[in-house]
Length: 480
Ligand code: ATP
Ligand code: MG
Ligand code: MG
Ligand code: MG
Image (cartoon, rainbow, N blue to C red; front, side, top):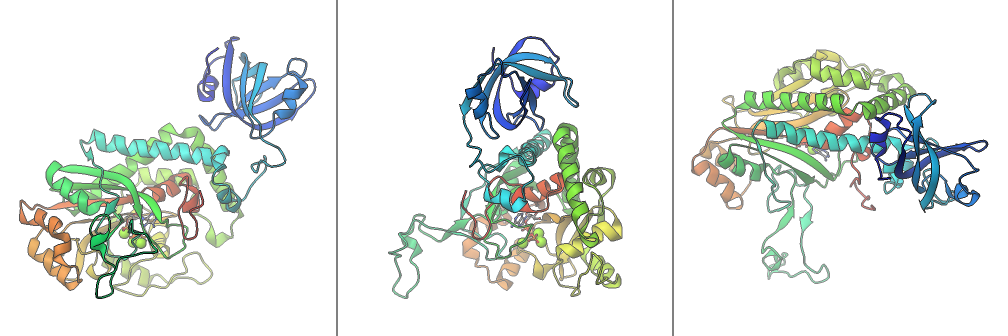
Protein backbone atom coordinates (compact mmCIF):
# COMPACT_ATOMS: atom_id res chain seq x y z
CA UNK A 1 0.00 0.00 0.00
CA UNK A 2 1.02 3.64 -0.57
CA UNK A 3 2.27 5.62 2.43
CA UNK A 4 -0.31 7.77 4.14
CA UNK A 5 0.41 10.63 6.53
CA UNK A 6 -0.71 10.07 10.10
CA UNK A 7 -2.80 13.24 10.19
CA UNK A 8 -4.82 12.04 7.22
CA UNK A 9 -5.13 8.54 8.57
CA UNK A 10 -6.40 9.73 11.95
CA UNK A 11 -9.08 11.77 10.20
CA UNK A 12 -10.30 8.73 8.23
CA UNK A 13 -12.64 5.86 9.06
CA UNK A 14 -11.67 2.35 9.99
CA UNK A 15 -11.38 0.92 6.48
CA UNK A 16 -10.22 -2.60 7.38
CA UNK A 17 -7.79 -2.07 4.48
CA UNK A 18 -4.00 -2.13 4.57
CA UNK A 19 -2.12 1.11 5.01
CA UNK A 20 1.54 2.09 5.32
CA UNK A 21 2.76 4.70 7.77
CA UNK A 22 6.32 5.89 8.38
CA UNK A 23 7.51 7.89 11.35
CA UNK A 24 9.45 7.94 14.61
CA UNK A 25 8.62 5.98 17.74
CA UNK A 26 7.47 8.12 20.64
CA UNK A 27 6.81 5.28 23.08
CA UNK A 28 6.45 1.53 23.20
CA UNK A 29 4.55 -0.21 25.98
CA UNK A 30 2.92 -3.53 26.78
CA UNK A 31 4.39 -6.84 25.65
CA UNK A 32 2.06 -9.78 25.96
CA UNK A 33 -0.33 -10.55 24.40
CA UNK A 34 0.28 -7.40 22.33
CA UNK A 35 2.41 -4.29 22.51
CA UNK A 36 1.55 -0.75 21.53
CA UNK A 37 3.71 1.72 19.65
CA UNK A 38 2.90 5.42 19.53
CA UNK A 39 4.22 6.58 16.14
CA UNK A 40 4.49 10.18 14.95
CA UNK A 41 5.50 11.51 11.54
CA UNK A 42 5.39 15.24 12.29
CA UNK A 43 2.11 15.83 10.47
CA UNK A 44 0.07 16.16 13.67
CA UNK A 45 0.35 16.42 17.43
CA UNK A 46 -1.45 13.07 17.66
CA UNK A 47 0.33 9.74 17.41
CA UNK A 48 -1.09 6.75 15.62
CA UNK A 49 -1.31 3.68 17.79
CA UNK A 50 0.26 0.59 16.30
CA UNK A 51 -0.90 -2.68 17.87
CA UNK A 52 1.61 -5.43 17.35
CA UNK A 53 1.43 -9.12 18.17
CA UNK A 54 4.79 -10.69 19.11
CA UNK A 55 3.63 -13.84 17.37
CA UNK A 56 3.71 -11.92 14.07
CA UNK A 57 6.59 -9.46 14.57
CA UNK A 58 9.92 -11.13 15.21
CA UNK A 59 11.78 -10.66 18.48
CA UNK A 60 14.76 -9.13 16.65
CA UNK A 61 12.64 -6.35 15.29
CA UNK A 62 10.77 -5.75 18.53
CA UNK A 63 14.01 -5.13 20.40
CA UNK A 64 14.96 -2.37 17.94
CA UNK A 65 11.64 -0.58 18.33
CA UNK A 66 12.76 2.01 20.85
CA UNK A 67 11.94 5.66 21.38
CA UNK A 68 13.35 7.71 18.50
CA UNK A 69 13.71 4.85 16.00
CA UNK A 70 12.33 5.37 12.47
CA UNK A 71 9.80 2.75 11.37
CA UNK A 72 7.77 1.77 8.36
CA UNK A 73 4.62 -0.09 9.38
CA UNK A 74 2.14 -1.93 7.19
CA UNK A 75 -1.10 -3.10 8.70
CA UNK A 76 -4.85 -3.05 8.71
CA UNK A 77 -6.65 0.18 9.69
CA UNK A 78 -9.20 -0.76 12.35
CA UNK A 79 -11.43 1.05 14.81
CA UNK A 80 -9.60 1.88 18.03
CA UNK A 81 -10.88 1.19 21.51
CA UNK A 82 -8.40 3.67 22.96
CA UNK A 83 -9.67 7.03 24.11
CA UNK A 84 -9.23 10.05 21.82
CA UNK A 85 -8.45 8.16 18.62
CA UNK A 86 -10.79 6.73 16.04
CA UNK A 87 -8.44 4.32 14.31
CA UNK A 88 -5.32 2.31 14.96
CA UNK A 89 -3.16 -0.05 12.93
CA UNK A 90 -2.91 -3.79 13.47
CA UNK A 91 0.68 -4.37 12.41
CA UNK A 92 1.37 -7.02 9.77
CA UNK A 93 4.89 -5.93 8.97
CA UNK A 94 7.28 -3.56 10.74
CA UNK A 95 10.57 -2.44 9.25
CA UNK A 96 13.04 -0.58 11.46
CA UNK A 97 14.45 1.99 9.03
CA UNK A 98 16.80 3.63 11.51
CA UNK A 99 17.61 2.47 15.04
CA UNK A 100 17.96 4.82 18.02
CA UNK A 101 20.19 3.42 20.74
CA UNK A 102 18.14 3.60 23.93
CA UNK A 103 21.29 4.27 25.96
CA UNK A 104 22.22 7.28 23.86
CA UNK A 105 19.08 8.83 22.38
CA UNK A 106 18.57 12.00 24.45
CA UNK A 107 14.81 12.46 24.09
CA UNK A 108 13.59 9.60 26.23
CA UNK A 109 9.89 9.88 27.08
CA UNK A 110 9.89 12.01 30.21
CA UNK A 111 9.58 15.68 30.99
CA UNK A 112 12.67 17.60 29.92
CA UNK A 113 13.52 21.16 30.92
CA UNK A 114 13.53 23.85 28.26
CA UNK A 115 17.26 24.42 28.92
CA UNK A 116 17.90 20.76 28.15
CA UNK A 117 15.81 20.98 24.98
CA UNK A 118 17.78 24.05 23.82
CA UNK A 119 20.97 22.03 24.15
CA UNK A 120 19.29 19.44 21.93
CA UNK A 121 17.94 21.94 19.42
CA UNK A 122 18.95 19.59 16.61
CA UNK A 123 16.48 16.96 17.88
CA UNK A 124 13.90 18.90 19.84
CA UNK A 125 11.47 19.17 16.92
CA UNK A 126 10.75 15.50 17.48
CA UNK A 127 8.94 16.35 20.71
CA UNK A 128 5.24 17.15 20.89
CA UNK A 129 5.82 20.66 22.19
CA UNK A 130 8.32 21.72 19.55
CA UNK A 131 6.64 20.05 16.61
CA UNK A 132 3.41 21.86 17.59
CA UNK A 133 5.31 25.15 17.84
CA UNK A 134 6.87 24.82 14.41
CA UNK A 135 3.66 23.72 12.72
CA UNK A 136 2.10 26.89 14.14
CA UNK A 137 5.07 28.90 12.91
CA UNK A 138 4.36 27.66 9.41
CA UNK A 139 0.66 28.48 9.71
CA UNK A 140 1.27 32.00 10.98
CA UNK A 141 3.71 32.73 8.15
CA UNK A 142 1.20 31.38 5.67
CA UNK A 143 -1.61 33.48 7.20
CA UNK A 144 0.52 36.61 6.94
CA UNK A 145 1.20 36.03 3.26
CA UNK A 146 -2.46 35.27 2.67
CA UNK A 147 -3.59 38.43 4.49
CA UNK A 148 -1.39 40.70 2.42
CA UNK A 149 -2.08 38.87 -0.81
CA UNK A 150 -5.84 39.25 -0.30
CA UNK A 151 -5.31 42.97 0.23
CA UNK A 152 -3.32 43.33 -2.98
CA UNK A 153 0.06 43.93 -1.35
CA UNK A 154 3.18 42.72 -3.14
CA UNK A 155 5.79 40.65 -1.32
CA UNK A 156 9.16 42.20 -2.05
CA UNK A 157 12.48 40.79 -0.94
CA UNK A 158 14.70 43.48 0.49
CA UNK A 159 18.46 42.80 0.71
CA UNK A 160 20.09 40.94 3.57
CA UNK A 161 23.44 42.64 3.00
CA UNK A 162 23.12 46.43 3.14
CA UNK A 163 25.20 49.49 3.84
CA UNK A 164 22.66 51.10 6.18
CA UNK A 165 21.76 50.80 9.84
CA UNK A 166 18.11 51.80 9.46
CA UNK A 167 17.48 52.08 13.19
CA UNK A 168 20.72 53.84 14.00
CA UNK A 169 21.05 51.72 17.12
CA UNK A 170 24.57 50.55 16.27
CA UNK A 171 23.67 46.88 16.63
CA UNK A 172 24.91 45.73 13.25
CA UNK A 173 26.91 42.66 12.31
CA UNK A 174 29.65 43.52 9.83
CA UNK A 175 29.96 41.71 6.54
CA UNK A 176 33.37 41.36 4.96
CA UNK A 177 35.36 38.93 2.88
CA UNK A 178 38.68 40.28 4.06
CA UNK A 179 41.11 37.68 5.22
CA UNK A 180 41.00 38.61 8.90
CA UNK A 181 44.75 38.08 9.28
CA UNK A 182 45.49 40.60 6.54
CA UNK A 183 43.04 43.47 6.76
CA UNK A 184 44.09 46.23 4.34
CA UNK A 185 44.58 49.58 6.03
CA UNK A 186 44.66 53.11 4.64
CA UNK A 187 47.62 55.42 5.23
CA UNK A 188 45.85 57.03 8.17
CA UNK A 189 45.39 53.68 9.90
CA UNK A 190 41.73 52.91 9.10
CA UNK A 191 40.30 49.73 7.59
CA UNK A 192 40.32 50.21 3.83
CA UNK A 193 36.79 49.12 2.94
CA UNK A 194 37.34 50.27 -0.64
CA UNK A 195 39.29 47.02 -1.04
CA UNK A 196 36.49 44.91 0.45
CA UNK A 197 34.10 42.83 -1.68
CA UNK A 198 31.49 45.57 -2.12
CA UNK A 199 33.97 48.43 -2.14
CA UNK A 200 32.44 49.85 1.02
CA UNK A 201 31.55 48.97 4.60
CA UNK A 202 28.53 46.65 4.76
CA UNK A 203 26.44 44.88 7.39
CA UNK A 204 23.58 42.41 7.79
CA UNK A 205 20.26 44.21 7.63
CA UNK A 206 18.60 45.28 10.89
CA UNK A 207 15.37 46.11 9.06
CA UNK A 208 14.17 46.06 5.47
CA UNK A 209 12.33 49.31 5.97
CA UNK A 210 14.38 51.81 4.01
CA UNK A 211 14.42 49.60 0.92
CA UNK A 212 10.75 48.82 1.62
CA UNK A 213 9.97 52.52 1.39
CA UNK A 214 11.61 52.70 -2.03
CA UNK A 215 9.41 49.84 -3.16
CA UNK A 216 6.20 51.31 -1.71
CA UNK A 217 6.91 54.58 -3.50
CA UNK A 218 6.65 52.64 -6.75
CA UNK A 219 4.33 49.68 -6.16
CA UNK A 220 2.03 51.33 -3.63
CA UNK A 221 1.55 48.65 -1.00
CA UNK A 222 4.27 46.13 -0.34
CA UNK A 223 5.60 43.98 2.48
CA UNK A 224 8.87 42.28 3.14
CA UNK A 225 9.14 39.25 5.41
CA UNK A 226 12.67 38.18 6.00
CA UNK A 227 15.44 37.64 8.51
CA UNK A 228 16.93 40.64 10.29
CA UNK A 229 20.02 40.75 12.46
CA UNK A 230 20.84 42.72 15.56
CA UNK A 231 23.87 42.33 17.77
CA UNK A 232 21.71 42.93 20.84
CA UNK A 233 23.92 43.04 23.90
CA UNK A 234 20.97 42.32 26.18
CA UNK A 235 20.27 38.71 27.05
CA UNK A 236 16.48 38.76 27.40
CA UNK A 237 13.62 36.36 26.74
CA UNK A 238 12.36 38.75 24.01
CA UNK A 239 15.43 39.38 21.87
CA UNK A 240 17.29 37.27 19.33
CA UNK A 241 20.35 38.18 17.29
CA UNK A 242 18.60 36.77 14.21
CA UNK A 243 14.85 37.22 13.97
CA UNK A 244 12.22 37.45 11.27
CA UNK A 245 10.30 40.58 10.63
CA UNK A 246 7.13 41.33 8.70
CA UNK A 247 7.42 44.84 7.33
CA UNK A 248 4.59 46.33 5.27
CA UNK A 249 5.11 49.75 3.76
CA UNK A 250 2.28 51.72 2.17
CA UNK A 251 2.17 54.86 0.06
CA UNK A 252 -0.61 57.34 0.86
CA UNK A 253 -1.22 55.94 4.38
CA UNK A 254 -1.14 58.21 7.42
CA UNK A 255 -0.54 57.04 10.99
CA UNK A 256 -4.19 56.15 11.57
CA UNK A 257 -4.35 54.07 8.39
CA UNK A 258 -1.17 52.37 9.56
CA UNK A 259 -2.64 51.50 12.98
CA UNK A 260 -5.82 50.19 11.39
CA UNK A 261 -3.89 47.91 9.06
CA UNK A 262 -1.72 46.54 11.88
CA UNK A 263 -4.77 45.81 14.04
CA UNK A 264 -6.57 44.10 11.18
CA UNK A 265 -3.52 41.98 10.36
CA UNK A 266 -2.95 40.87 13.96
CA UNK A 267 -6.60 39.90 14.34
CA UNK A 268 -6.52 38.04 11.04
CA UNK A 269 -3.50 35.91 11.92
CA UNK A 270 -4.66 35.11 15.45
CA UNK A 271 -8.06 34.09 14.08
CA UNK A 272 -6.35 31.99 11.43
CA UNK A 273 -4.39 30.16 14.11
CA UNK A 274 -7.49 29.52 16.22
CA UNK A 275 -9.32 28.13 13.21
CA UNK A 276 -6.51 26.13 11.64
CA UNK A 277 -4.20 24.99 14.43
CA UNK A 278 -6.74 23.71 16.94
CA UNK A 279 -5.03 20.51 18.03
CA UNK A 280 -1.62 22.12 18.39
CA UNK A 281 -3.06 25.13 20.20
CA UNK A 282 -5.06 23.00 22.63
CA UNK A 283 -1.89 21.10 23.45
CA UNK A 284 0.19 24.27 23.92
CA UNK A 285 -2.54 26.03 25.90
CA UNK A 286 -2.63 23.20 28.39
CA UNK A 287 1.14 23.26 28.59
CA UNK A 288 1.35 27.04 29.02
CA UNK A 289 -1.36 27.12 31.67
CA UNK A 290 0.26 24.24 33.59
CA UNK A 291 3.65 26.00 33.50
CA UNK A 292 2.04 29.19 34.68
CA UNK A 293 0.56 27.48 37.74
CA UNK A 294 4.06 26.45 38.82
CA UNK A 295 5.16 30.08 38.98
CA UNK A 296 4.98 32.38 41.99
CA UNK A 297 1.78 34.41 42.06
CA UNK A 298 3.39 37.64 40.95
CA UNK A 299 4.87 36.11 37.80
CA UNK A 300 1.68 34.48 36.56
CA UNK A 301 -0.21 35.55 33.46
CA UNK A 302 -3.40 37.51 33.94
CA UNK A 303 -5.21 35.20 31.49
CA UNK A 304 -4.87 31.66 30.14
CA UNK A 305 -3.50 31.23 26.63
CA UNK A 306 -6.84 30.74 24.85
CA UNK A 307 -8.24 33.69 26.74
CA UNK A 308 -5.34 35.86 25.60
CA UNK A 309 -5.89 34.88 21.98
CA UNK A 310 -9.59 35.69 22.17
CA UNK A 311 -8.78 38.93 23.98
CA UNK A 312 -7.08 40.13 20.78
CA UNK A 313 -10.06 39.25 18.61
CA UNK A 314 -12.72 40.62 20.92
CA UNK A 315 -11.29 44.02 21.79
CA UNK A 316 -10.76 47.17 19.78
CA UNK A 317 -7.16 48.20 20.35
CA UNK A 318 -6.95 51.19 22.70
CA UNK A 319 -5.12 54.18 21.18
CA UNK A 320 -3.16 56.15 23.76
CA UNK A 321 -0.58 58.87 23.27
CA UNK A 322 2.85 58.33 24.78
CA UNK A 323 2.34 61.46 26.88
CA UNK A 324 -0.91 60.13 28.37
CA UNK A 325 0.71 56.75 29.00
CA UNK A 326 3.51 58.36 31.00
CA UNK A 327 0.93 60.20 33.13
CA UNK A 328 -0.94 56.93 33.77
CA UNK A 329 2.26 55.14 34.76
CA UNK A 330 3.32 57.95 37.07
CA UNK A 331 -0.04 58.11 38.78
CA UNK A 332 -0.40 54.39 39.36
CA UNK A 333 1.74 53.41 42.28
CA UNK A 334 3.74 50.29 41.58
CA UNK A 335 3.67 47.83 44.44
CA UNK A 336 6.99 46.30 45.47
CA UNK A 337 5.54 42.88 46.16
CA UNK A 338 3.26 42.77 43.14
CA UNK A 339 3.88 41.92 39.53
CA UNK A 340 4.14 45.36 38.03
CA UNK A 341 6.94 46.65 40.17
CA UNK A 342 8.41 49.26 37.88
CA UNK A 343 10.13 52.60 38.03
CA UNK A 344 9.13 55.14 35.44
CA UNK A 345 11.61 57.86 34.67
CA UNK A 346 9.15 60.35 33.23
CA UNK A 347 8.55 62.03 29.91
CA UNK A 348 11.27 61.25 27.42
CA UNK A 349 12.19 57.77 28.63
CA UNK A 350 11.60 54.66 26.53
CA UNK A 351 9.12 52.22 28.04
CA UNK A 352 10.23 48.83 29.30
CA UNK A 353 8.09 45.74 28.77
CA UNK A 354 7.02 46.00 32.46
CA UNK A 355 5.39 49.36 31.71
CA UNK A 356 3.87 48.13 28.49
CA UNK A 357 2.36 45.09 30.14
CA UNK A 358 0.96 47.16 32.98
CA UNK A 359 -0.90 49.37 30.50
CA UNK A 360 -2.36 46.37 28.67
CA UNK A 361 -3.04 43.90 31.45
CA UNK A 362 -3.90 46.14 34.38
CA UNK A 363 -4.89 49.58 33.25
CA UNK A 364 -6.76 49.35 29.93
CA UNK A 365 -7.39 45.60 29.86
CA UNK A 366 -7.20 45.89 26.07
CA UNK A 367 -4.44 45.63 23.49
CA UNK A 368 -2.86 49.08 23.34
CA UNK A 369 -1.47 51.20 20.53
CA UNK A 370 0.84 53.88 21.88
CA UNK A 371 1.54 56.75 19.51
CA UNK A 372 3.41 60.06 19.24
CA UNK A 373 6.66 59.16 20.99
CA UNK A 374 9.42 61.65 21.86
CA UNK A 375 11.54 62.14 18.77
CA UNK A 376 14.77 61.63 20.68
CA UNK A 377 14.09 57.96 21.40
CA UNK A 378 12.99 57.16 17.86
CA UNK A 379 14.73 56.73 14.50
CA UNK A 380 15.50 59.59 12.11
CA UNK A 381 12.91 58.65 9.49
CA UNK A 382 9.76 59.16 11.59
CA UNK A 383 7.44 62.02 10.69
CA UNK A 384 7.85 65.05 12.96
CA UNK A 385 4.76 66.42 14.65
CA UNK A 386 3.99 70.14 14.88
CA UNK A 387 4.82 70.21 18.60
CA UNK A 388 8.50 69.80 17.62
CA UNK A 389 8.93 67.22 20.41
CA UNK A 390 7.20 64.09 19.16
CA UNK A 391 7.08 61.97 16.02
CA UNK A 392 4.28 59.96 14.43
CA UNK A 393 5.42 56.63 15.84
CA UNK A 394 3.23 53.80 17.06
CA UNK A 395 3.97 50.68 19.09
CA UNK A 396 1.44 47.90 19.59
CA UNK A 397 1.49 46.27 23.02
CA UNK A 398 0.18 42.78 23.76
CA UNK A 399 -0.52 40.98 27.04
CA UNK A 400 2.36 38.88 28.27
CA UNK A 401 4.64 40.36 25.60
CA UNK A 402 4.80 44.15 25.56
CA UNK A 403 5.90 45.56 22.21
CA UNK A 404 4.97 43.30 19.32
CA UNK A 405 4.82 45.91 16.55
CA UNK A 406 6.77 49.12 16.02
CA UNK A 407 5.84 51.48 13.22
CA UNK A 408 5.45 55.06 12.10
CA UNK A 409 4.40 57.49 9.46
CA UNK A 410 7.60 58.32 7.60
CA UNK A 411 8.94 61.83 7.16
CA UNK A 412 8.13 62.61 3.53
CA UNK A 413 9.24 66.28 3.61
CA UNK A 414 12.78 66.59 2.32
CA UNK A 415 13.69 69.67 4.36
CA UNK A 416 12.44 68.20 7.65
CA UNK A 417 14.16 64.89 6.95
CA UNK A 418 17.56 66.35 6.11
CA UNK A 419 17.39 68.70 9.10
CA UNK A 420 16.73 65.72 11.39
CA UNK A 421 19.57 63.76 9.82
CA UNK A 422 21.90 66.68 10.44
CA UNK A 423 20.86 66.80 14.11
CA UNK A 424 21.56 63.09 14.41
CA UNK A 425 24.88 63.18 12.51
CA UNK A 426 23.68 60.96 9.70
CA UNK A 427 25.61 61.92 6.53
CA UNK A 428 23.34 62.68 3.58
CA UNK A 429 25.66 61.05 1.08
CA UNK A 430 25.16 57.64 2.73
CA UNK A 431 21.44 57.79 2.12
CA UNK A 432 21.30 59.75 -1.16
CA UNK A 433 19.15 57.02 -2.71
CA UNK A 434 16.66 57.27 0.19
CA UNK A 435 16.48 61.04 -0.11
CA UNK A 436 15.73 60.70 -3.84
CA UNK A 437 12.24 59.37 -2.95
CA UNK A 438 11.62 62.72 -1.23
CA UNK A 439 13.09 64.69 -4.12
CA UNK A 440 11.02 63.03 -6.82
CA UNK A 441 7.31 62.50 -6.31
CA UNK A 442 7.36 62.38 -2.54
CA UNK A 443 4.12 61.40 -0.80
CA UNK A 444 2.92 60.56 2.69
CA UNK A 445 3.60 56.92 3.53
CA UNK A 446 3.71 54.65 6.55
CA UNK A 447 4.71 51.20 7.63
CA UNK A 448 5.47 48.96 10.57
CA UNK A 449 7.55 46.01 11.66
CA UNK A 450 6.03 42.98 13.35
CA UNK A 451 8.56 40.81 15.14
CA UNK A 452 7.51 37.38 13.91
CA UNK A 453 8.95 35.58 16.96
CA UNK A 454 7.13 37.99 19.30
CA UNK A 455 3.92 36.97 17.53
CA UNK A 456 4.99 33.34 17.94
CA UNK A 457 5.55 33.87 21.68
CA UNK A 458 2.10 35.34 21.97
CA UNK A 459 0.28 32.64 20.02
CA UNK A 460 2.11 29.65 21.48
CA UNK A 461 2.26 30.92 25.06
CA UNK A 462 5.95 30.02 25.27
CA UNK A 463 7.98 32.07 27.72
CA UNK A 464 11.30 32.37 25.92
CA UNK A 465 11.92 33.58 22.37
CA UNK A 466 14.62 30.92 21.95
CA UNK A 467 11.89 28.31 21.91
CA UNK A 468 9.83 29.64 19.01
CA UNK A 469 12.51 29.74 16.29
CA UNK A 470 14.01 26.46 15.10
CA UNK A 471 17.64 27.47 15.53
CA UNK A 472 18.01 30.45 17.86
CA UNK A 473 20.93 32.84 17.50
CA UNK A 474 21.79 34.53 20.79
CA UNK A 475 25.07 35.68 22.36
CA UNK A 476 27.46 32.71 22.55
CA UNK A 477 25.05 30.46 20.72
CA UNK A 478 25.45 29.54 17.08
CA UNK A 479 26.00 25.81 17.55
CA UNK A 480 23.24 24.42 15.38
P1 ATP B 1 12.47 46.39 21.71
O1 ATP B 1 12.03 47.71 22.28
O2 ATP B 1 11.67 45.24 22.20
O3 ATP B 1 13.97 46.18 21.78
P2 ATP B 1 12.64 47.69 19.20
O4 ATP B 1 11.79 48.88 19.46
O5 ATP B 1 14.11 47.82 19.31
O6 ATP B 1 12.15 46.46 20.12
P3 ATP B 1 11.92 47.78 16.40
O7 ATP B 1 13.15 48.36 15.81
O8 ATP B 1 10.73 48.65 16.60
O9 ATP B 1 12.30 47.05 17.77
O10 ATP B 1 11.55 46.47 15.53
C1 ATP B 1 10.23 46.10 15.18
C2 ATP B 1 9.77 44.85 15.91
O11 ATP B 1 10.71 43.80 15.78
C3 ATP B 1 9.59 45.04 17.39
O12 ATP B 1 8.35 45.60 17.67
C4 ATP B 1 9.70 43.63 17.90
O13 ATP B 1 8.47 42.93 17.71
C5 ATP B 1 10.70 42.99 16.97
N1 ATP B 1 12.07 42.93 17.50
C6 ATP B 1 12.94 43.95 17.68
N2 ATP B 1 14.12 43.52 18.12
C7 ATP B 1 14.02 42.17 18.21
C8 ATP B 1 14.93 41.14 18.58
N3 ATP B 1 16.19 41.40 18.91
N4 ATP B 1 14.49 39.85 18.56
C9 ATP B 1 13.22 39.58 18.19
N5 ATP B 1 12.32 40.50 17.82
C10 ATP B 1 12.70 41.79 17.82
MG1 MG C 1 15.44 47.07 20.64
MG1 MG D 1 11.00 49.41 21.48
MG1 MG E 1 10.13 49.58 18.34
